[in-house]
Amino acid sequence: MIAPTRLFLHYLDRLHELLQRVAAFDADVAGRRLHPDMAPLLQQARTAIGFTLRASCPLAGREIVSFAEGELTLPAVLSELAATVRYLAEIPDADFDRIDALNVHTTAGFAELDLSGWDYYLMYAVPNFFFHYSMVYAIARQAGVPVGKADFDGYHRYPPGFSFARQAGEAGKDGS
Image (cartoon, helix red, strand yellow):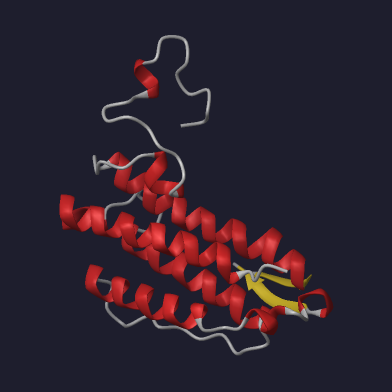
């Protein structure tokens, strides 16, 4: 079995790169929001980071930990991210061997949930992580930070200056 932390570690690396791009472009982007009633970029990043621990710890039979510091600054969130990556990387794969037998009780907003280990991971934790991670990407992109799909997933590659919008009849076919 592949440990649940593998997915998170890959995308936490991508999140680190996105935050570095934001810092290099304009640190003020970190306080921007996609919509007035949504959290700003840094809070979205902190929430995404927190979901990796909120998911991985119970599935590995551990108490949920947090490395969030009180202040919501780019250096504080990058420090939290680095500590989270170190922590997740140190959880042995064998700690997840009981995921099939687990039942996880949690809250989702004001809802109380009881989910099997796999349902908790696949149906709740992973989608919530990606929601907040996607908001970081969307806010950065909307603010003009030069990021694209390759920056989001770390797998896609496009030639410099490539744009789906400029491709006659092809715009958006891959969901970009």
